[in-house]
Length: 250
Image (cartoon, rainbow, N blue to C red; front, side):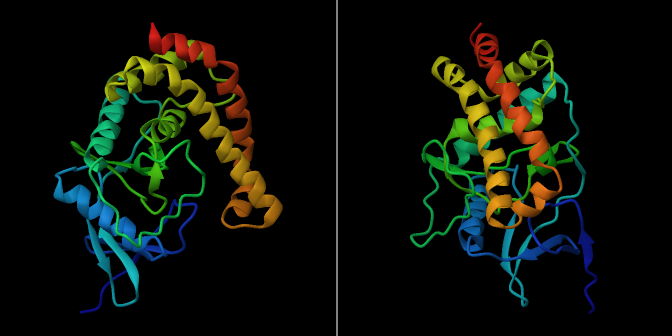
């Protein structure tokens, strides 16, 4: 039987990604064995918010569950943002007892604030597929050691969303909805705002350094103008840290 391959578009990092039936095939990397172990652990503990991992095919490509549905839209309602926060909390709780393979290799491109557990590192609307009542984060290639707040800080940037020229009076309640959905404690609510700025700034620095060194795909993304968002967004977030903290701790 001839298998029909349908090219999937929309990604910025991976090379050719295709759909074959109910699976997705994408180029394997040095991190693929560790990512496969992570996704299988999540399936074993019953976490529904990640695709199933099926190993590699005869061409050496990573094989994953194809999740139908639509990509998440922004802005979301407060109820949807609380659900995002709860989903991320469920993921972090599910991975807390994951023991990576002894020879695990991860492809974490931005050093985290600390390494407490394995994180996704790209939790964002462009990686959230909504399939009816099932919400699934995709694109786990960049997973690796990090911290709960570092992972959540990146998610806040994308889901609020936080961008230059945004209205803190509008964005603050959206930030609070995610934090409430996650169930942050008082200490975490105090620490999160600075990490939102730090992670956003680190993304800008990654793109800028890629342009300087030629490291791909960051040099290409810089040339396409992605840094024009991340730099000003970091400025905006950092300028309003006291406001974000006040909203979270009120």
